[in-house]
Image (cartoon, rainbow, N blue to C red; front, side, top):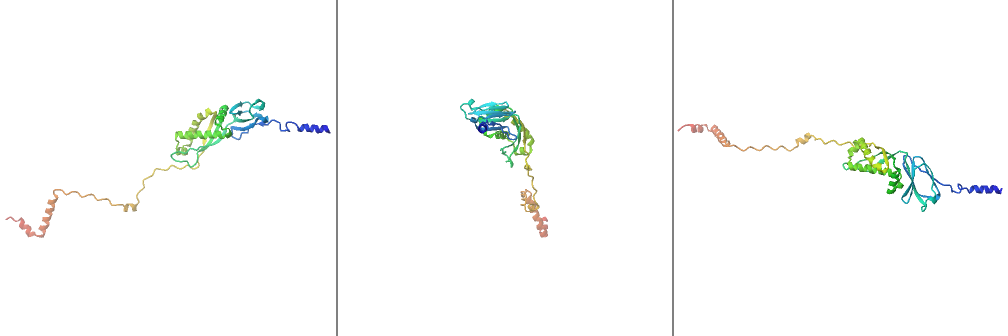
Length: 269
């Protein structure tokens, strides 16, 4: 009976029952995710870093990182990591391609957009070490995939500003603008360790119609009737023969009134 009690006691003292079994640390990637992390992991827990195929992990201590590229289990023994009690762990999904939404804050100077410019991009990681180093330098470990979204949106905004893209281009030249952005983004992202596979601009629901040029409006009838009269042409100045014509006309009228006087004037003396 005592033997059985001791056996049960020893069984309860196994490392697994005492909470001493190493804790396995695995990447928990969300759908369409390429980046995950653990902040300030306690190395004294004697954990095991588990890496699946197509993943890369970086143990970050005081800004310095140790890469792990091959799949397997890696004990995090604090005896092998002196002068450090905590570490950050960055996981990168190098085998997947993420399809994520993006949104631009760009507003054209000619006419402000009534809806923000949005879309979807498809991205993968071709150089995980460059991605890790950039994340450490920019102190964006806590962002995970939001780091990628910010890079895409910022680069799109810079390209639209540089090319002074108009609101009409966004509303009516969607496919051409889409192809332009893809061609612009790919060389910008390659030095960052990222590969852009595709980029789409979401179709805008109700883009405003372009306003036609104003046409001349006919004057209504009541406006024409009440319009100001046209000024009369100025009278022409009298010529030199005009006084003689007036005197001749006066003599003719007098002769008709006094015919005897007129005949006496014509009778010779």
